[in-house]
Length: 247
Image 1: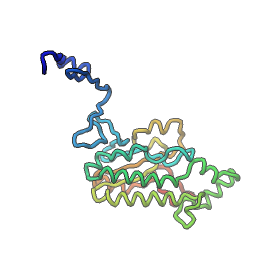
Image 2: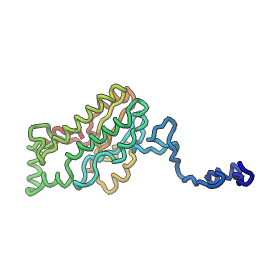
Image 3: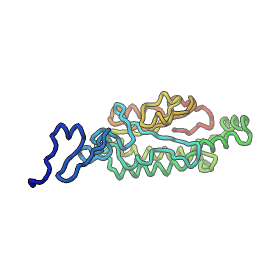
Image 4: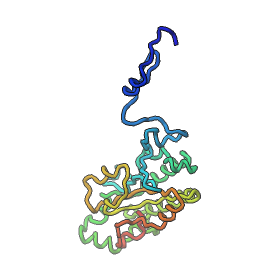
């Protein structure tokens, strides 16, 4: 260092001010959390503990928000769009690459394009026959089942069938690594586990709101437990229209 260069400040002053000094320039560190990547090159969790993968650790599981349907066809459904950019660290540690995770998320997004909107559901069940039509549809129409007519706009069977195929594909890989994934739905939403966006998702919702989550078990024991659990936590859809549901 040349004799004309200013001396760095005392250590305690630099720490308190969160400043990093060089001879000619001072860099300000943002407060709140660190955006430095955690050791090992995994970008999904920062050194300050911020999860970029939108997941929440719950024991031997990670929970990721999954909004299955929306009020309007143009609303975002499924996973948060940023999820595909960050493979969860727990999966990465067991050999799931970023490219494989991104492929899974993109495949799921394609499946979600077949999902019904809340407005569409109301039209099928209530228009133009209102209450009588809703009773007839719920009693006699297997709109969620996997049958030859499942691809028609008034049926959801192709969506549920696509979700089932997607989960089987993903679990073919995860099961070999003592992990398991399942999409689950909770009703009322108070039964659902904590997730990153749970508070905002339930805001303004009543007890009829069906809250879905993606849950990934991270150990062999937890995976066996998750496999035995139903997707249905309180939904109890016993109507003919619910035959074939898995979310």
